[in-house]
Length: 353
Length: 121
Image 1 (cartoon, each protein chain N blue to C red):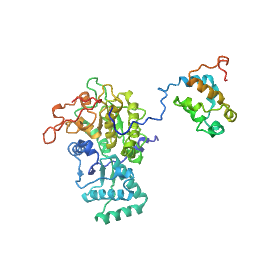
Image 2 (cartoon, rainbow over the protein chains, first blue to last red):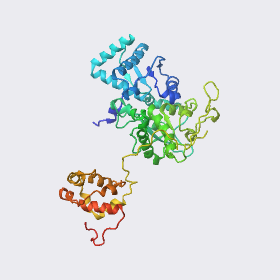
Image 3 (cartoon, one colour):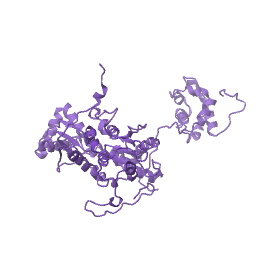
């Protein structure tokens, strides 16, 4: 009997009743993404998802920078799980890939070393008088969107097709290292064939670009970024990726990690300022979207409500290609209806408005 | 250019499409036995000059082969051409000829006319 290898590269993703944990940096740099995810799950898919206001950091950035010790991280993670337990949920969905890696690591540790679990329970009790249960199912929000990608497709107003040429849009997908490289079995397609974003792109009409440095780090890497003098190494990684994808002329980059989205977006500005180099033909840069932003755009959500104007590389060129309607006058309109100050224009990277 | 407090690090990866290896081709033409080098470092271990300076023949010819020529001409001047490297090479590479011809190729000097074409000096 033929063995179906691809089945071994799948993971279990819960159907409903999720406990959502927000990301620290995404709320600053991509503030529309998390709201879009909650809207997609609640309004489009009719799922139950809890957005608890008492949540806090997972300590991921401090932990990977050797600033926060393991025991502290373990206790903080335990407190987050206690919030989930208190709300009566068992399926944990952390918005950030770093958090996803931290939670996966702690669960792996607790499963293999029960004395550490006892320690975490003790520390949490001593500090907060709280108790927790380990989640039954822990998935990244991109897994959830991936699972329901064909359910979302009929609701979508747009497809990943260039309306001028009729050809599929060429998309670079970049998956965060902490999604599948630390614990491969917790990612769809494992570390060898990560398919979580590629599955969305293919389902929604786009074409995935397979370029040589596809699995290379985005350049974040925590320690090499946090010290200013080391940032040359961080940006060199990102530049290497851009140089590798440039000949394939991608229409945009899709990421599932906050760090990757941030660095691949912001470093394009920095490289342009330092070396007068952009990696697209027109000089606007390659737009970088999160998977929630992309899903929201295709579902017909307002690009400015999704927060696309807060990206470094502006996305009007991409919106025009897909045929998404937008009002340029409302680009910098705040939630209150008042116009916000316009950002300064970069010297080298072009922006439309 | 704006200053960000850091510069973009240069990669150590070799891009063969962008490599200017005319000099390497020229050297291989002059010293065909260099193709046999396995980079064991015997030449460096036996080197007289290496005992007194930071001269490192393996590092030099590896850099040359990677078309990274910067500073090599100055370093090559430290060689005394004693030929010990020639005696220890397990692959029979004519290392002394290699050093002389690296200097010639880097300086764009034509090889001696009395040397038979294709033969190693």
